Image (tube, rainbow, N blue to C red; front, side, top):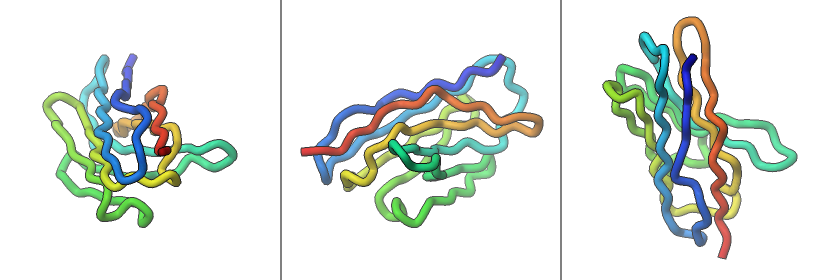
Length: 115
């Protein structure tokens, strides 16, 4: 069993910052990529940012320049630093750990951007 657990969500004012954390644990051999996804009510779950074990990062256009994804491979941990937050960023944020044979999702953490 592989567990993926997110933390760090909460309520923040527009223009503020939050840092999300995600840790994978359990029967892990090798994680080649980890990523953050988000889903707002009535909308599809969308990719936010990914990072590979080699350090390559990718971001969806709407968060480029504001969000930064980083990793600690030895600890199977990934972070999402979110700056200049907008109300449109409000969503449940999900972490996913990608392995060769399977992908594992966390339960999600709520991020609400409101004044």
